[in-house]
Length: 168
Image: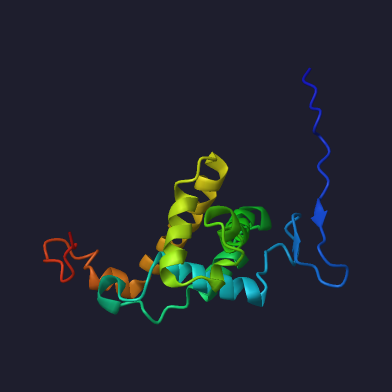
């Protein structure tokens, strides 16, 4: 006879604000994470610091990375999107710790943004490095996974020369 200690499964609900259901873990309506408008702006700013305009000859310059990250957070269950949201917050408020400047990421010039990202990606604490790397990889996937990028690099046409060769 086998005894299962977790035979009763109860739905778990998470409420952030009393009037607005932001996420629930039981799979019912509202089980997705919704980014706030300011978080979408942050995602756009951080994303363009990671992947600047002009990438791949400008094929994806018009892609709004903030909106792409918002969609990415709204599709999986809340717990899968939580790390993406946490990485946005960590990056946005990192300059006082990484650069010793009393500003947010949005208050930095492009060179300082790049320096802040480099320091996050090279931080001594693994959790910080991993979170920054996750944000970088997610941004790359969202931008470089666009259909027009696949067409521009001829990803699905073997044997054809690449019109955008890698730069040294």
